[in-house]
Structure formats: C-alpha cells, structure tokens
Length: 393
Image 1 (cartoon, rainbow, N blue to C red):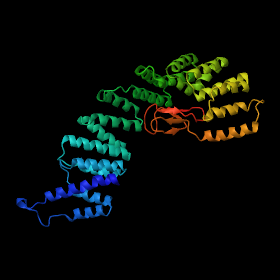
Image 2 (cartoon, helix red, strand yellow):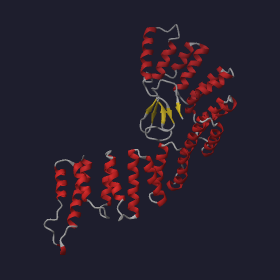
Image 3 (cartoon, rainbow, N blue to C red):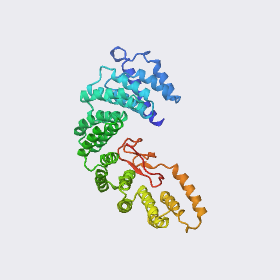
Image 4 (cartoon, rainbow, N blue to C red):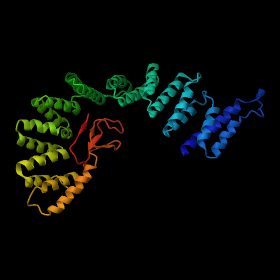
C-alpha cells in the first residue's frame, strides 16, 4: 500500500496540473467552471483510502504526452510488481496506442508490455513483442534475454540455441553452458523418439562447445551402457571422474552394471573407495558400504562407515550405520536400533534429495535446470536426502 501511494499521490497532482493547464480560458485567465468533477472524485477516493478506484479515475484523466510517459511506465511497473497484471497491461497498451510517442518511448512500452504478458502467462504475445523489438533494434539485449526465457519455458530448445547466437555478441559474454544444455535437451527429445543417431550427433556437438562439461559425457556413457558397450562407457566414466567426480553419483547404476557384467565386483569396490577419497558423496558411500557388507560382512561395513559418520547431524549416514549394524549379530541394543532405523527411514522418505543453491527449491529428483529460478546447474545433493539419486534430463 505504501508503494502504491508513493506513485498515486504524485499521479493525482500530475493529473490535476495537466487538466487545469489545458482548461485555461483565453488570454491565460482561469476558467471558473472548467474543473472536471472526476478529478475531485479521484481525490475523494484517495482520501478515503480507496486507491484502486482512485487509480482508475486518474488514468482516465491523465493524457499521454512527453510529460507523462514516465508516469505511465512507473504505474504499469508498479501494477506488475503487485501482481495486478491486467492493470499493467491496460496501462502499457494505452501508451502504445498513442501516436505521439517517440521511437524510444514506444520501444520501452513494448518491452514493459511484453514483461506483462510473460507475467500473465501469455507467452505467445510476449514472444511477438520481443521479436518486434529485435527487428526494430530497440532494447535488443533485454528483448533477446526475455525471448530466451520464453523459449526455455516452452522447451523450444532449437530456438533457444538461435537466440544465444544472437545474444552472445550483444551481451558480450559466453553462453557455452546454456548451449551445452540446449544440445543435451534436444538429444533427450531425440532419444524419446528413438533417434539414437541424432542424439549421438547432438551430444558430440555439445562436447565440442565445452569439452569439460559433464552432462554430455554422462549421457554418452548411458548410451554406451544401453548398447552394451562397456568399454566405451568405462572410458567415459574415467573422464567424468576427472572432470566432475561429484556427478559420478548419477552413474551408480551404469557403473555397477558394467563391473558386474564382467564379474569385477572387487575392482568396483576399490574404485568406489578411490572415488570417495576425492568426493564425499552419500550415494557412493551407500553403494560402497553395500558392496563391503556383501564381500566382508556387516562388521567390516560398519567399521568402514564409521569413518564417514562424524556426527549425528548427518541422518543419511547415521541411518546407513544403523541399517548395516543390524546385520551384525554381535551388535547390542538391537531393539533400539530397529526403532531408530524405522524413525530415520520415515524422516528421510519425506525429505527432498536435492536443493537449489540459488533459490532453495527442493526436489526428489535431480534437475539440470532448477524448476524454481530457471538457472542451470544449481541443484546439489542434500546431506539429509535419503534415497539414491534420480535425474530428470
């Protein structure tokens, strides 16, 4: 309400001043009966703390000219920030309809109206306005950045790629990360349609853009495993481990498949231990503990796990310790452990696996692009997550 009044009070004075100034009698003498009753009605609404009604009155009185364009823009922006998108659209549409605007003023109004449409979920209309701005060479960077948001929302990844090619020289920054993800998203779509050749080609392009980005490598490794090409997959595993060891948790199923297929379980256990020395990852710890328990028994698994359980604030590892300990007949207080295991299990079942470092969005599955703030690669494994990682491509 305070923010609204800060705009509304000056608006009432501007409306009154403009109206009075344009109602002067000949030779500069004021007209006695030229004051529009609507102006006083608007003031009355304002004094009676009815700002919504006052706004409608003053907008009707306020003509658009070079003196009032900024007032209209400020008012429209205020409406949009307050969530009153319909009013924001009306104000900005009213601006655009005026033939007296300069090209720059019209461009600013088009940009604001496009933002209104985006806020309202009218992405097709927003796209049209942002495209028009690009054609007019007005507010090009802002128009391209918002076009990119529109196409990402619509998951039109090819158009996203087209926009990044235009935006990079304007923004004067590399958009390699975004382009890698767009190629990977297109590869995901190709795989859904059974076009493995197209997917492989797209992933190759993604790697040419950034050789050290883990996502195309991960997808290539999965393709190799799906085609029973464990030799290629193993080579890719090593590259991912060197570049981004924390992402190896996403490949546990593929990694274990390749080693188990070739009956190299002991070698896998050693590799997992080696991985943990580089990157403490709860999913990797759990898989390693499971392997040790199978090979050497619960007591050995408990001894191994205790090295990673530094305090009880890590419920995942505590839960794992209890679970493995229950398999050891020499462990005392079995009943208590069962109760703790059940309690922690229920707690973890309700806890999200991943949290966005930028906006705090939480999810059971891994997203390369946060569904909350729409940023790439901001999701991280939560220390209190209780399930094996799953990925949404």
